[in-house]
Amino acid sequence: MALISQIYVPYSRHDMNIQYKLQRYGTDKLTARSYNGMGLELKELKIQQHHGQLFHGGGKRKNSLYHKGKCNLLVVAASPPTEDVAVISEPLTKEDLVAYLASGCKPKEKWRIGTEHEKFGFQQTTLQPMKYEQISELLQGMAERFSWDKVMEGDFIIGLKQDKQSISLEPGGQFELSGAPLETLHQTCAEVNSHLYQVKAVAEEMGLGFLGIGFHPKWAVKDIPIMPKGRYDIMRNYMPKVGSLGLDMMFRTCTVQVNLDFSSEVDMVRKFRVGLALQPIATALFANSPFTEGKPNGFLSYRSHIWTDTDNNRCGMLPFVFDDTFGFESYVDYALDVPMYFVYRNKKYVDCSGMSFKDFMKGKLPSLPGEFPNLNDWENHLTTIFPEVRLKRYLEMRGADGGPWRRLCALPALWVGLLYDETSLQSALDITKDWTQEEMQMLRNKVPKMGLKTPFRDSLLRHVAEDILQLAKEGLQRRGCKESGFLNEVAEVVRTGEIQGNLLDYSEI
Image (cartoon, rainbow, N blue to C red):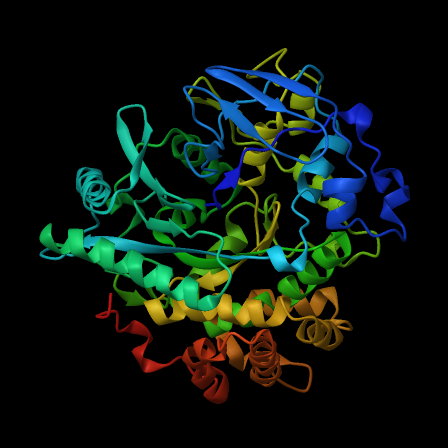
């Protein structure tokens, strides 16, 4: 569920002279420079690793792994999760967790676009979901034909990776591409096209097809095969204890999301706020889940509705993001209060469902008494939090249903146009600055059923969406990459307020 990233080496706390110690990050800006250069002088750090040593010299951040001549180790942050690679001599502190998030700050010229999308596979003759054995054969075929590296969990193939792309399996076999960090939307759409071509080339020979939609339109949870991934066993047992729709989320939903960068803490906050406030508009524009078990379910985006009763400890709109004191530390405080799912040790998942990461930091985790977390554990914990916008070392926009391939290009176009152009970002902030928490929650609750026809103040949400789409278009035009055409797929939806009839035509896939 995440982009591939260079392995992260924890900073020595004794050399962390970040202006982080300012009270609640008062007026100072924590920028890419202050985090990634000036304020983080690193001592020489030698970290023992199972198969080698990870060395870190002073000055510039250069990570390298010496093991049988290989350097620049890449870690896939999807399943299996980041291994317990680094063993640190001192327990983590909250400052370490804050610095981890802040290390994502980067100058604008290094901002990238990462797109992730999921789809349902089915057997063409029966329309039944793909079995794991068929998925395994599909993954093996793609690896052999298109030179992907296999990702294994025990004896099971559970994914593929190639350069900075990865393919992973969601709990019910939903097939996900986590795309590489790319510079332009043209590259993003080319990546989507290439992926769908490869999947189709192998799947058709096996009698398999794929459907781009937000919620499985035909089969019940009991009909969906369970993937052989340890983390999903833990989640499947825990979900019914905290919400009535968690298993539906796991086994019957698909999404498309985009992951975007920020330059500083201030930039992160501004983008986070716009992303949260406008996420219901994205949900309405990409609403594409009106059927359940072969019948209309009364929703335009049933997938979005499902998140409202999955697990309220880790989902939702995050009102604290709009507090004056919000910053990296606030998100860390929130994430520390989210109950855990698991810890990954010795290539196995340890069930820690419902337990506290704070206790883990004290060495008092009931499932692993006396053990302390490392930053890989923190990274894995962050992947188990599911708000409408999620913060890692980048921001994830998570409000859209899965759909046909043209819409997979339109979703990142919307958010890149809004968030990567300063003028459009500020205009979006101006539009939403006086929206109340009650209004934003109302939109979150009503949009899954009413879409752009949701009443908002003295008009309809559609009229706000018109302004937002125009801002996105102008933002893309100012980028100078001829990308605004990618918004055409949703322009008609905004113009009419209606879901286009061809939304449910997936013959292109």
